[in-house]
Image 1 (cartoon, chains in turn yellow, brown):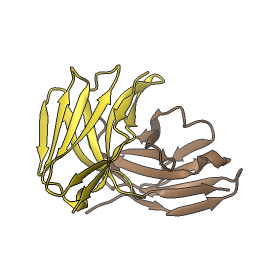
Image 2 (tube, each protein chain N blue to C red):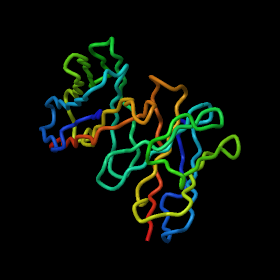
Image 3 (cartoon, one colour):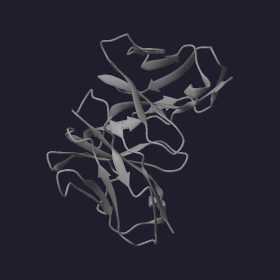
Length: 114
Length: 114
């Protein structure tokens, strides 16, 4: 079956460093992939979308890469700040039950220490 | 800035009761979604809605669930006979388009079934 995998262990980094989060997927070639941020008790907030023909996308301190050969997306936050501490979710449409369903990974918790 | 709103923020109900969760999507958006997130687990897609009908639904969205857009602004999720395992955070989202467009999530309704 098709799966999205994100590292379940929290990522702890020092303020100012670059955080790198990984999203792997199996058995599928999505046309695009999205990254969201979720704070405790809140709804996800859209950050970036990258298409299959794009290798890299940037938005301010955020950078996303998309390697369709490795079936992997990397999400980078440069010059990280304590306010970046949150859970980061990757999402793509997965074929299930006869249709394409928006599917989220479990997310990786990022903790930025001052 | 326009946002998706949801009411109530917290709903407590007895097992077997019907609940209606309400959402007001962003006014010019055309696609509407419901997701749920059981505590500590990933965000799961329930249903998408466009042009007054369901466009996709997941295996979770069984006969006890229904959605409706009763007027030009509200979008509701009804759970006919709640079970203990329906306890979760329910998020409504809306988007301008379908594929390759960001979804804007509401703050969620925490449903507790006793």
